Length: 220
Image 1 (cartoon, one colour):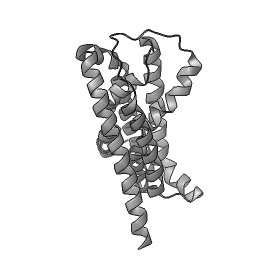
Image 2 (tube, one colour; image 1 turned 30 degrees about the horizontal axis):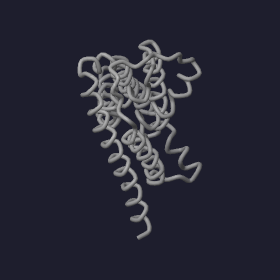
Image 3 (cartoon, rainbow, N blue to C red; image 1 turned 180 degrees about the vertical axis):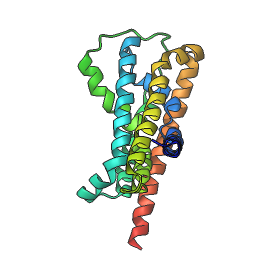
Image 4 (cartoon, one colour; image 1 turned 45 degrees about the horizontal axis):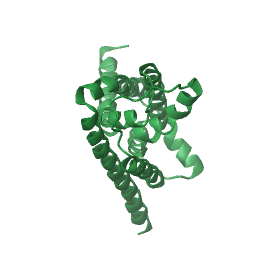
């Protein structure tokens, strides 16, 4: 593998990371991750963090490589994905916004089975909390703009590396979420959860509006 090829892979990987990281925003999702896992032990949250990171990696990679083909097969457009996904994000943000704030300094740990972890790892913790319709839309766009022939191996390797780097940031953010919460304190975390829940609700409205606007534009 020549130096120019290595440089091309590195550059493409950084482009993918820079495009996906602000939308995935694992740091901003950390308080919500904690609020959705009350009573989970540190070990259970560590297992969840690993599973969510892996799920996020495969979901982003699959969306980038074959997502557009799957949508074409079912006759689904990206604006429809945005509308449907936006509704899911709105529902998640609204439920978190209406939930009662936890005033106890420490959650009483409860027994969590491996099946419970597996059930929650994908929905709602991976989809739509971590990898939402906005992230999937960006991954679909990146994949659609990649040439299927010229430099396909280089682009494939770059996609693997780029999504793996995003998944690594997800794992690190969720893995050490409890330490951040202890540093901030319970009151500050409750305030942050409210703010991030409202922002999540607004993001869902924006994603849905983008899809609705695109659908109306296609009718003209």
